[in-house]
Image 1 (tube, rainbow, N blue to C red):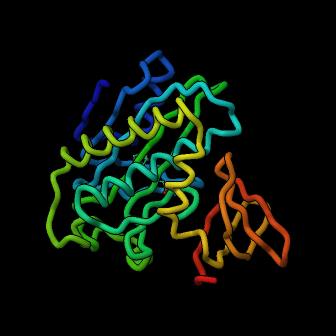
Image 2: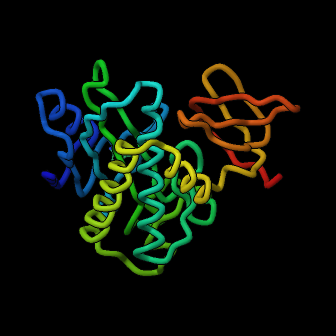
Length: 241
Ligand code: BTN
C-alpha cells in the first residue's frame, strides 16, 4: 500500500485516476488536506475543506462489470463499521453508498472506472473535523460531521489507517468469496431498507417501499405490488413502512 498525501489538490479522484492510467498499482492511495474541486455523485460538487478525510483508492478488480456498483457499497460498509468501532457512532447506510449519522450524511463515496474497467478509483469523503458553518445553509439539515456528533475532534491519521485496514479486509472478502456475506452486513447497517423511499433516476421518479438489494447492488422497491430494480439514482427516505 502506498499513500500519497497532499496539502491541496483539485480532487483526489482525479489525481488517483491519472496515476492509475499510467500504471499505478492496486492500493495506491491518494489523500489530501483539502480539495478545490471535490466531486460528488451525479455531477455534484463536494465541499472539501481542511478537517475532512478526502481519500481515493486505486483498485484493479477482476469482477464482472455488472457487479461494479458493489465496490462502493462495500466501502460504505467499511466506513460505517469504522465509525462505530472507533468512536461508538451508530452509523447507518443509505442506498447506494452514503453513510449517515442520525439520518444526516457524514460520508459520501464516488467510484469511477477507467476504460474497459482497467481500474476503479474509489473516492471516500468523510466529514470528520468540520464545523457545520462551513456548509452552505441548504445542506445543514441533511449533513453532519464526526466532530459535531462527538463534540470533539478526532485524529485524521488514525481514522485514515483504521478505514484502510477495514476496507482492505472487506474488499478482499468480496473478491475471495462473493457479495453474500457482505450483503448481510449491508442489510444490517441499512437505514434504507424498511423505508418508504423516493428515488430520482435520470429516467423517472419512483416511490415505493425499499425491500432489499440484489447481488448487483440494485435497490428493490415494491411499487403497488410489483418489484422494481433501481440501478442508480438519488434516494430520499420518506418514512418507515
Ligand atoms: C457523494 O456525492 O456522495 C460522493 C462524494 C465523494 C467525495 C469524495 S472526497 C474524496 C474523493 N475525491 C473527490 O473529488 N470525491 C471523492
